[in-house]
Amino acid sequence: MDKEEAKKKLSDLHQILKISEKKQELLSLREQVKKIDLWQNQQNAIEVTSKLSELENEINEFETLDLIINDESSNDDDFKEAAKIIKNLEQKAILSDEHDASGAILSIHAGTGGVDAMDFAMLLERMYLRFIESDKNQADTNLRINTNITNDANLDKSQRDTSLFGIDRSKWQVTVVDRRMGDEAGIKSVTMIISGQYVYGLLKKEAGVHRLVRLSPFNAKNLRQTSFALVEVLPFIGRDDPTGHLEILEKDLKIDTFRASGAGGQHVNVTDSAVRITHLPTGIVVSVQNERSQHQNREVAMNILRSKLQILLEIEKKEQINELRGDLKQAVWGNQIRSYVMQPYTLVKDHRTEYECSNVEDVLDGQIEDFIEEELIISN
Image (cartoon, rainbow, N blue to C red):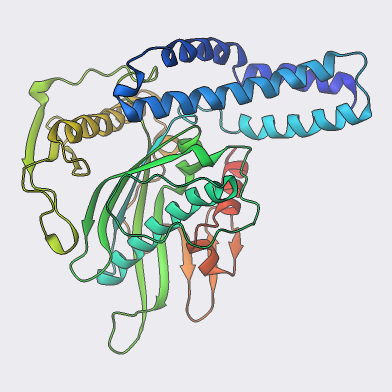
């Protein structure tokens, strides 16, 4: 790469990555972290500090590149380093859509397939938790999941390369806000909020119908069973998010409270702390039962509702439903975006990119980086 080509790439990246705007945002975040009441809202504080760190890293990376390219004393080794930085920033440019840098609301719903579908939904939940955890293992940090759910997401610290578009997933935080257990096994549905930089950008293409083929452990004859689950991914748009401009009227809401339930339908709280909010004009229903405080559950539910309504508003204005929510279809045969086949052969295949992998266990263990990368590159 010669100097003129490098300068052209520098100029393009400055525009695509909106470096000037991000510098202004960085100044604003630095002012926020100086406030003494920042940590009164712990989740907001984590989001602010995480975003601050990510912006500082990205801007420092760009400024290092600028310095190398425009320094007359830069040598061949310097330009090799510049080429690496350019590649990293170009990958981040793929994640430059309006909501890509946001956190995400990820929901999984069991589809057709009975108990097997509910078990598959739980396998997908574990897969995404392991995907998030994998970067934390490399960074030697602990996953903070604000839930009572038992899972083995901390097992087997792999040494494989888990980097993806230069995004540091070790700072991502997961909060499971609603989880409905299956009648016999698995889960009917789960909703989690994942906070951090570029969560939505990386996970948005996971939205759609997922299909599992295996010998059913719930069938007395051990017959082959096909089951489905629906994954929904939305950008998390909080009250203070600059992309959220929606006013929600109290008269449009129906708010119900009930007791939070654990496994087997057992009540885990003696008070009516769980909250269900119905938005009457659209029929959208949001349930949250994670926190012990009804007030906290209501606040989380309102944030999820705000995100869903904001996306609906943008869909109406821009007609970009496939880009913002993924192609949300019924979780049945023919609509799948990815198949996980464990019998009569082993194969995971993405039907949009044709990318495939024969190691189903590794994929279900969270090793989905290649699938995400392939889909994002092709779609861009």
